[in-house]
Length: 298
Ligand SMILES: [Mg+2]
Image (cartoon, rainbow, N blue to C red; front, top):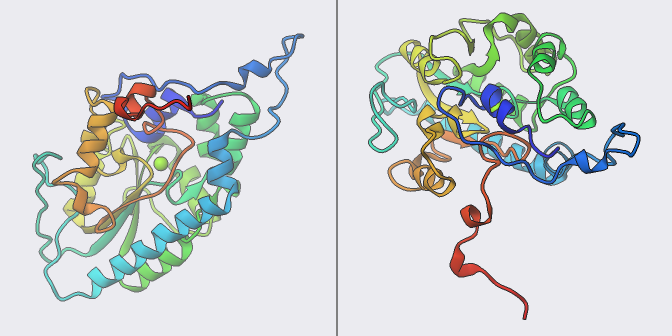
């Protein structure tokens, strides 16, 4: 039990339509199954949860991103220069991106919710203690009833205050389901993020016909607003093209960090760390370590 794995990738990361690759599971707490067949609660949370939800480093990483993001958004908002969308223009691609001029649309910043604005502490502890990677029925209950058991990530409330005071509308685009809109509105409010309204400042899976892809919802938001910043913990929070099934680990990294996309990070696109679940948690030794860097101590 180290990552939520494929099912969570589908529901949380938004790659259901195009992701067929498996996300290999790290060594599992299944090894702790007792001889009686019962499964005791693990001695500690998995490493990714320890880092993200417990460590000073995880908290600092979030606060650092949000401080940079708020300063960026404020600077853009008060600039007299013409504004431009950071949402890929419809029909353009990651290989040849285009970004539309905004005209006089009102400014907005668009964020994923889970492990971007809020940490889902209640659900994540439950999954870990239950030795579950993910369970759709449990997650559905979490969307409905988790209010008060998720928290704003470090730096979020200050950043939201800065953005709103600069006249920028804060919008959430999440793969939580439209059927549970009230539960997600309640969860965001209870975490101290203020009011979000489904269809206006909260966009959910089911709002557009493209399922777990967020591209359709991004296009809808960009038709109403000038989106000057986006935040997410997975690349599908920026463009669905990153979830293309044919992308290897290395190709996906090259697509995100090479030209023409590289210049967007920290300048309109802001990534939050998530070592717990999602499409970043994949790859074998040969995917991750270059063969010419193999080393042994003898
Ligand atoms: Mg997320």
